[in-house]
Image: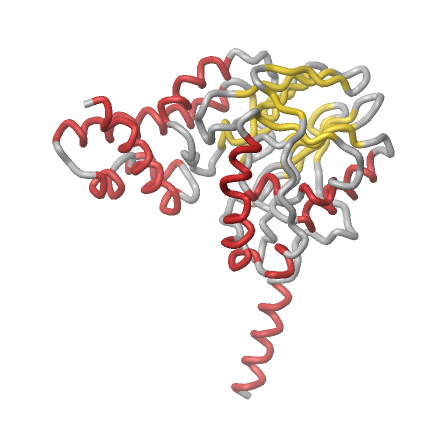
Length: 310
């Protein structure tokens, strides 16, 4: 009986760990505005169970073609996203826009690489991919498994955004903006002027704790300019679809201000970075998911920036 129970548990685990994103089935998307579709990723760490499907991805349909905004954390997810697009329109895919270089946003790129689309990114993105691409392929093999990493290819953008750039989809124009270092040093936002929908990438997190891989000072400096984008709604890089704008920035701003205040106070007292990693911004713990996974990292990054102010 014990062996039978173990076999049943093994089968149940195998079923629960099966692919979330099947390339022969369209990815579940929501039409959040006319011609604008998005898929909410899980608020979780990338792993074999969720197939790396943790980032919000989407697409925008114009009269001449489609722009994809991020492609997900695996080629499997990218193929499912392509199937979702084809369930909506047969117009050509003109652009694949990557909001930055992290694996959960770009590992699906290979699903679109042979379609003739132009890949678009921040001016710093090719350098970032050159520096980290091989490492991502190696390190994420153990995270999401051989089957999901096998087809992943690092696809750099060929159309680079230095400041702002407009893309015309036919009857619909997108305004792309490259930001100074914040979440990363190659953050890009996509604003659909027709529906006033902002795909913010990871410049905006909701419920999922923000992650600093660029600059906390830069992120705080960018928030007022982000708030000036005349959007009605935002698709965050992580978190629920969608949120009113610019109110969606409030929780993120509160977290960064608390983190910065705590870290600066610790530096002034002579505390070391390990103390900051343990205690900074702990008052914000209940407001965010994945707090324990990322807050110590954020505190360490913030400490490294603010200690130079002394």
